Length: 379
Image (tube, rainbow, N blue to C red):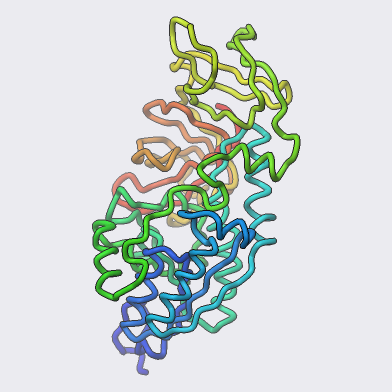
């Protein structure tokens, strides 16, 4: 191959057949389409699926990634498309890197986002290293996010389909990881396009429903999982107002999240009350009026910066941020404190901002993701 050879679709100056790509396969339609598409284009595809938690329990649960059924589905796609597929047992790694912190964060009154930690500590760390060990040129995933080549380096951008965009969950991707990763679905305009491709390739998962829950939390019942991981964690206590007046009782702080209104069991009041704070040490759920949820100043730590230069270069700057995955980016001012700490001031107050969640940075004038950090205490 000469230096002026055209780049293939993954950005390498050699034929697809000479380009090895490891595809992280969850067994769902997205990663299956990525693997099938690359195989059809002639790439040297290797499919890898991670077994992340107890296989016996996984077999009994539908609709979650990396369960027993999903491992079977990923293997079947590999057989259909004719490329090798491996299952790696990451159960211990996943528990230590993701599940334990999830439980401990909830017990500390935070609202963790384990999918981010899984991408950061398992998929884009250990699995990515496995891909390199297999002499792969890159690793591809089915995430809805775009990798674009900018004037200086590879950049991370939000997906073309805003309703499927997963940039909130991938803010901790480092520049080194981004250089190695590929996201072939990020440019698609809708999930229907993905399913149409699955049907085109004749994949058995073409009509498989999307996963809705966190993979190790059946039916969204966080408390049950935490009690299993940390027996005796659900200690009862009082529901109090901001003045300390006892309004009711609860059977464990782990059953509540900041901003929650339903299920408090303190009906009959003139105005609705919301969870505004959790005091783990006192075993108290503090409730107050909706306006008490409004937050403008958001303290951050563990910041990952993938914009140009470094975080401290320009000092204070205008950016756009997301403080939850379901909201569009909103205008804010970023004030760096150190290379890994900052305060974000929201131009318009957001409600229900909670420690343990992520605050993701965006270029206000484009779709570029600049990184983000973890919200670590009430403002």
